[in-house]
Amino acid sequence: MPQTWIRALTLVGLVALAGVLLYHGGLAADRNASFELQEGQKADAVPAAVKGLIDALADEDAEVRQTAAQSLGQVGPKAKAAVPALVKALADSQPGVRGAAVMALGRIGEEAQSSVAGVAKLLDDEDKDIRSAAALSLSRIGAKDKNVVARLHDLSSKADKQLQVYVRCALVVLDESATRHVAALGEALGDADIEVRGAACYVLGELGPLAKSAVPALTTTLKDKETDVRVAAARALAEMGRYAASATPALAKALEEDNAPLQTEAALALGAIGPEAKAALDHLIRAVDNKTVDVRGAAVFALGQIGPDAVSAVPVLTRALRDQNADVRTAAARALGKIQEQ
Image (cartoon, rainbow, N blue to C red):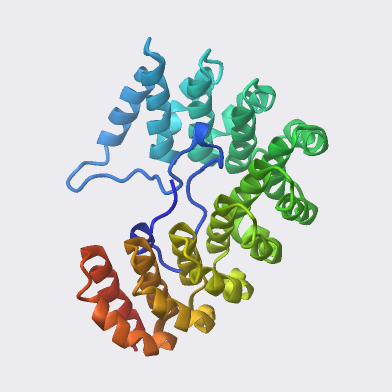
C-alpha cells in the first residue's frame, strides 16, 4: 500500500529504503511495515512471538502459513531464528506461501544469508511474481555468492522483461559496476508494457539514492499516459530525497492536476526533497486548500520539510490549524514549528 502523508510525518531527513513492495498486487506488502515492541512489552517476548510464528509455518492451512510468513517479514531482522523454517517454506506447494516466505527472507536481510541458495532457486519459479520477489530479496539479503550473481547476469538479458527489472535492481546492489544496471532500469521506464514501467518505478524507488542517475528518466515518467505509472514515478522520486531536486518543477506541475493520488505523491516527493524544493512553494500553498484530505495533509507536511524558506506559507498553515481533519491540524502544527525554528 502507498506511503501515506500521515506515516510520512514520522520520517526525518531523506526517505530511507524501507520494506519490500512489488508493483504487482499478488505479493503486495506494506513497504512501511515494521516490528515495534508495544509500550511496556519486554524485549525477551520477541523470541516467543517468533517461535509461535515458526510453528504456524507448519500449519495445515495454507492461509495460516502465508500469514505467518508475512508476519515474520514484518518482524524483520529480529526474526532471524525463523530463517530455516522460511527456507523450508520456499518449497511450499502454494504460491502464496512461497511468495510470502521469500519476501520475509528479504526483509530479514543480511541475517538470512543462509537462505541465498533457496531464494535463488525461486528465480525459476513458475509464478512470475515469485521470480521477481526472489531477485528483489537477493538484493536485500546482500547475496554476494558468485554463482548467484552470475545467474542474475544471465537473467538480465534472457528473462522476461518484468523479471529483468527486478534482476537489474539486485545487480545494482550486488554487482561491482551498478551504472549500467541503473541505466537499463531508466530505459525500462519507456517500455510499452505498463507492468514493466510500473515495476521499474518501484525498484528505482527501492534503490533510492543508489539510482539517483535515473531521476531525469523518472521526471519524464511523471507524464506517462497511465496514472498508476505516474503515481509510482512520483513515489520513486520521493525515495531519492534531495537527489530528486531537479524534478521539483515537474512535481509542482503534477500538484496542479485534478488527480488526488498523483497530487499526494507529488507533495510527499517535494517534502522528501526538502529545502531544495522551495521553488514549489506557491503550488504547495494552493494544495493546502485542496478538497481531498490526503492532498492537504501531504502539502502541509511538505511545507514543514522545506523549513524556514517556507515562511510565506505561515498564513495558510495557521488556517490549516482549523482544518476539519485532526491529522491535518496536527501536521500543520508540526509544520509551523519547523518553519519557525531557529
